[in-house]
Each structure stands twice: as C-alpha cells, then as structure tokens.
Amino acid sequence: MLEVRDVRKSYGDDPVLTGLSFTVAAGEAVAIIGRNGSGKSTLLKCLVGAERHDSGSVLVDGVVRDESAASFRALTAALLDDADYFPDVSVVEHLRLQAWLHGSSEGSVAEVLDELGLSEVADQLPPMLSSGQRHRLGLASCFVRPRGLLVLDEPEQRLDVQGRTWLRERLKAEKAAGVAVVFASHDQELVEAVADRSVVL
Image (tube, rainbow, N blue to C red; front, side, top):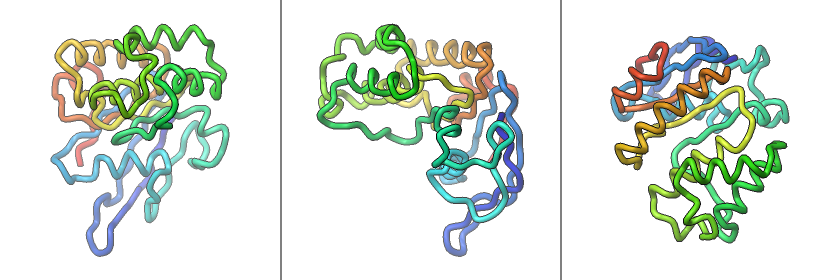
C-alpha cells in the first residue's frame, strides 16, 4: 500500500531524513519513533504531500504519490499536528461534510461521534472545544470516511487512559479491516500493541 524509497529531506544545510526506505502493506502498521526533533512529523508530512521531500519517492498503492490526485485523496486519511476546521461549522456538520465528500453514509457520523465521546458537543463549534475534544474531532474526521492508508502523528496525545485504550483497539481494528497504518508515537504501549515493526529516526 505504501512504499518509501530513499527519501531525503533537509532544511538548508541541516539534513532531517537521510535516505529512508520502508514499506507498509495493507493490514499492517508501522510506527515511526525517535526523539523530539528527529524528523517524525516531517516524514509523515512528506508521505501525504504536506511537505516536499528533496529526493527519493513515495508510492501509494503502486502509484507515485500525487496529493492533488482524487485517487490519492480518496485513499488516504491523515491527522498531522492540529487539524484545521471551518470555525463556523459545528462538530456534527464538519463530520457530515467529510462523510459526504468521501461517499460515506450518514449513519457513520453518529457512530463515530459516540465512539469518540463527542455526541454531547456535536452542535458546538470547534473553537469552543477543549484541545482534547478538538484532537478527537481530528481522529473522527479520519474514521467517518473510507481509507486504505491511515497516517497519524502522535494520535495518543491529549487522550486519557481510557482514550488510549480505545485507540489501541481501534488501530488494531483498522489493521484487521485491511488498512495500512503509519503512526508516529512516544507511547511505547501503543507501539507494542499495534505496530508490526518500527522505523527509528
């Protein structure tokens, strides 16, 4: 599903990614681990086209990644850093829009709202949510739509113990459904429970 070939990225004279290669098959999870500043977020951004790598290639489903292609956008769900939201669109409206854009059923929105504990704030605007609720909204935006590749940057952040337990089980369910998962994490328990292998930066 995902193939990374000799990807390199520098900022000025400072190399961040120095010839990185790995693959992720459908139904497999790879954890990206390393100290702060090691390039984890940069790598994930390069995978989805939010950053341009200097050399090498990223293939998704056998095709060189083109973030402007409808096929890539239909296949890839990602949550990197803090997601952007329409400030005047409620939580439920935001998720309904995501579902509609990707051809998901209306029923999936109610299910995901309940699963993420967002039902009680469904009619609120994103700026009114706590940081933890906004993070769960970002996760919900990934789960209301079809996906073959799921890319997450520290998905455990701002989740309590119960939320982290849910996340482990949800990502294992994603794998069981045939989704390729790539995630950066500092949570060793999450990595050990979900990842088939790790890429260390």
